[in-house]
Length: 235
Image (cartoon, rainbow, N blue to C red; front, side, top):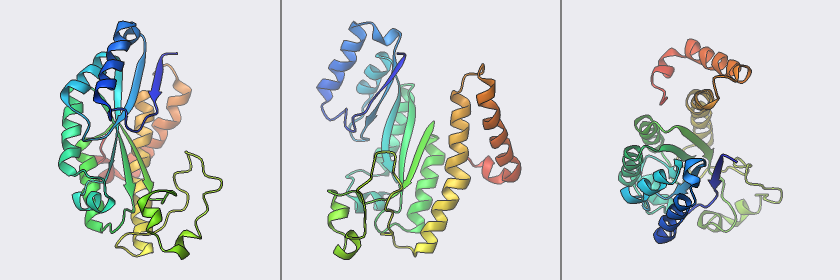
């Protein structure tokens, strides 16, 4: 084993425990042969934590930025804002760590302006990895509980598993269904999928020519077909 992922949404919730974990990894000498990544909330991160994670072999931090709009974040109840998002990016860059950005489209009350703010944030932050999904109200969340009972009764989570992030998307935005559907479609086509292709190409070893060739071909096609969009891509 050469790499692991800590599947803990709030590994920084107990700051002392996280620092002790980093110290233990270093004492065991694992930082010399093991790479790892973990998730932090933007309001949990600071220079010391990131430096200790880096010293312990961490290469990437995942953040649930969700949006580049403070108004959208407040409506979601995230208790964060764009300044905290930017601060997390800046601190993580200074520590020499990669960034995995989680983005959510279709937040309650989201406007076209909120959506554009998210795109601007991503272009500024230039995260190495971007994961984007439509809002799907999971049972037990405040959004799910506040749904109209008639709407909630139509949602089926019986066969849900973690990878099924696109199950049961509903429109809670301030936009008509057609508008949010089209925004999300274009976001995936012109922004997220090309970025994912680039990320896979970057991280695939040069020796794996068979794996790199289709990625290079798909990326080249995108650049040739959409040169202006490619010029503005966060790669």
